[in-house]
Image (cartoon, rainbow, N blue to C red; front, top):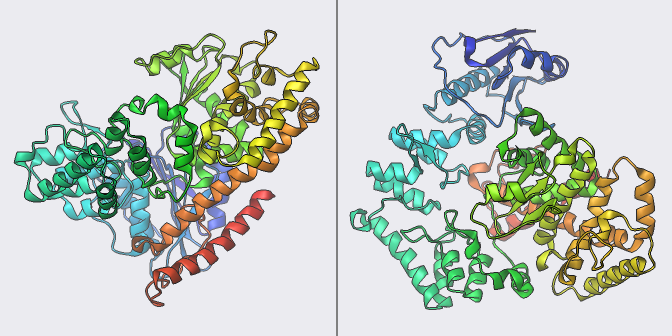
Length: 622
């Protein structure tokens, strides 16, 4: 085997003469470190078989930021082409098995072409072969595909645009122009006066262009605007019948933006109409991404019955979510930021940040908590390695907030914007302490997602577990009254002068529920102390293990199950390997050859998926 440095300084490796899958993987295991020491900024690695292709001579140097920096193509012992790739900071390899007609030469050519085109910010065409098409689109989605979407619009490549629009891009994202102006895809299209493409963007939840003028729009766009106006008018007039009708007729729309980019949910919140707000949320609508989340009224956040309303009944599933369960650490790494005071951190602190999530993930409940918060897809975590308190970094990140934190606040979950702030100065002295605080805050969010009910560890209507946890609280209070030495993690919860600071009794349930996960990680290296805390707070630990963890598992499994059903029932994904379970083979003829009705499809899929969920659960328990 040999390493060939194609393209000179373009930071791309071609590793050739790998005859089998095992040989290629073994080579990476042994020499991976040496490869990256040779070229620290390498973006793509392509493993090839001994079949060599002509080297690509011309290659323009451009900036390339990829979430996937390892791409492998080679042949298995059964003469079947296998493409394997691994996400950055993820230990799991993903593989896509291609049919026999899809030769190893073609797979190598495909990977080289994709690498070249993406680095140059272009893609000439999407491959027609189904397996190759899936690979190409997946690779694009996880690299700088949104820029390719912009390029396709700018260069009038509308066939490519149609293919790229099938990927889960967020059309609120902005790219910088030559003049350093930040624009959305809709801004570019409106400037080019391509009204047909603009309509497609709007129908896929894009905001309106900044300088949009209705009188200059096409008739089709005016019809679209009219529907948006009807929704906003129905909200203002409290006409639920019309709202439901519009929701059913426009089921793909999440925001129902006005031309000023105010969402339907945002308007309902500003009008203080709780019932309309709940109706929109239950039917899958979201507040606009350019709106201030603080318009969600205080009474809504304080009213537990409001959260209970949202957790009851069937809510529309959000199928745009792309984080597979095994990729949760990758998600948290890319959606968290390390700071030293208010300065963005350098590499060493980013490694410490990753280490904190790794420590949390070592425990069974920690892995569950991180998977749930990653699955939601909204949380962002900020860590300050220069201060014990979150107050400095919070003021820096959210300059307009009227909230104040004191020097004793080492961690906080800010639900309005789904932000977590951690003061991590003591990392070097006590890594497990900081990891425990980080886990504590993520557990607050996990409880909110699983139970609603203001982060309490039971649903609003669950009287049995409410009473059980009330007994747990009383038990803990009695221990304090008996002057038993209580660990610092617990001594903050209850009202009393001998404790560091006090919580209001209204949040005792929510605060006490996250103490067990925090303790498990806090005493990660001290089994004796953890055992003693478990014996003292036996009722609290039992509640965590018998109620909270099973509810979290069920929540995660149900989300995965819905995601899998969606993937299997979507025509474009007939031949893919599922995001979450790459070893599940998909019956390509499920909907075509058998000509099943939707109910029959549901029955078949449920049976298949439940079998896989059970297998996955068994492996998880091990």
